[in-house]
Image 1 (cartoon, rainbow, N blue to C red):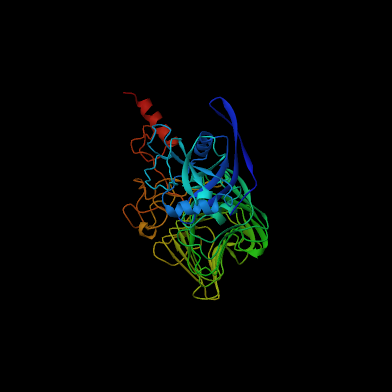
Image 2 (tube, helix red, strand yellow):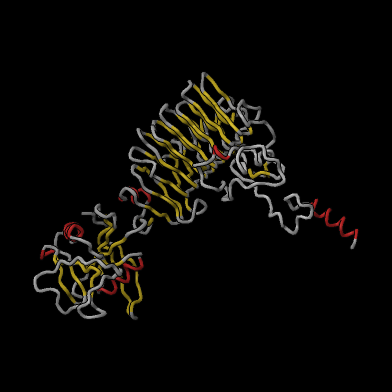
Length: 491
């Protein structure tokens, strides 16, 4: 039985009276239904139910003999706590309803029950059978919570929530900075409530975020800034069969001078790790400051990702994205503005070590060494690269650290929309719609319309924009000139 230090949850005003609730056990997860249960101590049934609602739940609804037996075995403190549950007939005598509005018809009455009191009590001394009692008969009640696990509401740390969660659970993390290693070994969703801008995992030099055996394609990490790694790469997927997804995350400020991979290290993962809508920026490592793949069995897929301002100690030969084992796939990514001496992407050590590049901007010449393979299509690669749809041109970013495309970029409508299908939904890294046709640009890609190259899709103005006097899809000085010229002509 899982007991935790008693927590006084504060004073609440109920009917003009001040009251305090104390959580005396939990949350404890029922493996049969995945719900979480708390034993609470309060003055009466009504205070317990009000407190339960403040946590997003109710006093427990008991659906069947299995649930009743589990509560009786795990939550009654070896038979010393008589627990109020949600069943009551306070509104209409003899009409029994559950506090959460459930229509569960399960009952487990003791002999002679129910009688005239209003609130149902689970009695461990009667083998878990139920009696009716007045509102103050017992100071204990059992609260049932379903839905997402809350951090820090249910558990004070992310790792504690992960350890307690059952497969398929969702963990929601409120804004703040969280520390400590996070190791995920099961299919679950771990997401921040308000995104990476407000929710940080600080690895404090020696910690790491890890996907390990048990993580599957149903394992999702969503919406965190991951920073502070030093001795270990910030994120590592390691172990046979490991798969999962990482979305809307920012990897920054991770500095691993003696390590392979500053931000992301894929090793011995025979499944597929997919990273979507992530920013890998401002990291450093001995080599492969952005992503390092180091096992023949690993596959990493990156969609709508930006790699920028990363640097490696061996920058003369190693790239920001590097395979020394396994396969890395870049789709609609931008690899630009990294260490000026480094290559954008590199592949080493044999034909099974490869990087596949589609619809991607790479502003440094790739490097293949000792038989690695780099294959590219419909990409803008500095120095040029063989492959259909590839070219070498200034991508014409907006500048100032903004890697969105200018209106005169050769990357607009130059990608292959079919190389993007099945990945990343229909939006770019900025949340704008993909495959948005620019009527002022000749389509050089594939698809109707083709997709732009890079992590950002150019967003042409509405063709009916009143400020676009010359109809070129932009509002700039040329529109002012057009207006002034017609103004001088008069009517």
